[in-house]
Length: 186
Image (cartoon, rainbow, N blue to C red; front, side, top):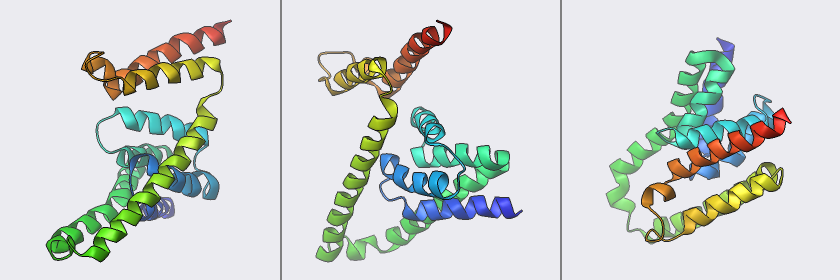
């Protein structure tokens, strides 16, 4: 029972501190789950994060489910997900009740401007950490350059399905499987 409570309260904390979602949550997850609790390694986090990106739903929710499941099985996955979602859902409900009263308030607009800047800084921090962990060799750098190039090309130059994040991630996975599998077999 204690382990389940630890899972849910850890993810409530992560949910409370995870402004911006997506890439912005990685520093919080790294601090809480890798550095503080030792539940994951950075490589495991990146693997879960990669899977969370290509599965339907929000990245933070998917990541919570995977980590909770690893920690305490399916019940842990459910509790981690509920813990992660609870703070945000509560905040959204509160904001929805009062948004019309505050949306045009200059102080609220300025606060959101500051929050966006902070989220941008957290995303940049995450990108820099990912760069250090991902580029283990020249092959990874080549995959990156190709995927980045395809993702920034205008839609008229390549078919939209090629530019789709799902297509790019799946194709990169297949290329990685082929390239790195050959490396292990040699």
